[in-house]
Length: 231
Image (cartoon, rainbow, N blue to C red; front, side):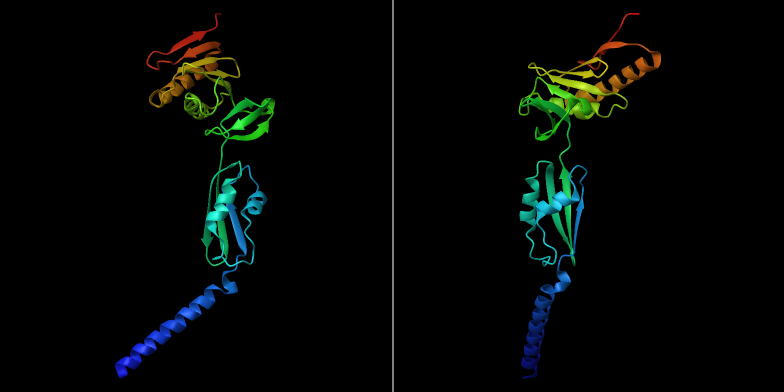
């Protein structure tokens, strides 16, 4: 009999504990009072919160994080988003913004475009430091190579590029704002690092020596060709 009573007492105690836990989880102790937004540079915190539609004072357990993330991903500048509960009363919104890589002329306007080909913002070409992608459109076979080149050339300090051209033959040619033509061939992943390193050395040497480079042919990085202006 004593064993039966002890068992019943244990079950009753667990039942009371579960009720207390249920009441506690539904109490105001877990009502949202802070929404943190991280990872944004182009989007404002206010824009993100407006789209997220997280109401202060709501239980942190009632928000559907998947639905909030889906709403945020519909923003053009958002590549990805994650929403995390930070108990007891904070919701953290992590934003991965799309990064503009090149300009694209479309619909009679210049647009910033990310590596996936998403049009981000309409801009004035005179006020942008991004190179203009020509001869290519997102989805073309040569588009990934153009993006590889845009990312790689971005690492060259002190050199601005006006244009990256993707030819129908799959070959890439870039042009600096000073008019230097850079022939990169197919700009394969295996060769691009070496091509950029050689280009960096060539342009630095030209600046130091005061020479004028007409073109640099790096189609075969093992046999680079540099053409200088006469005189």
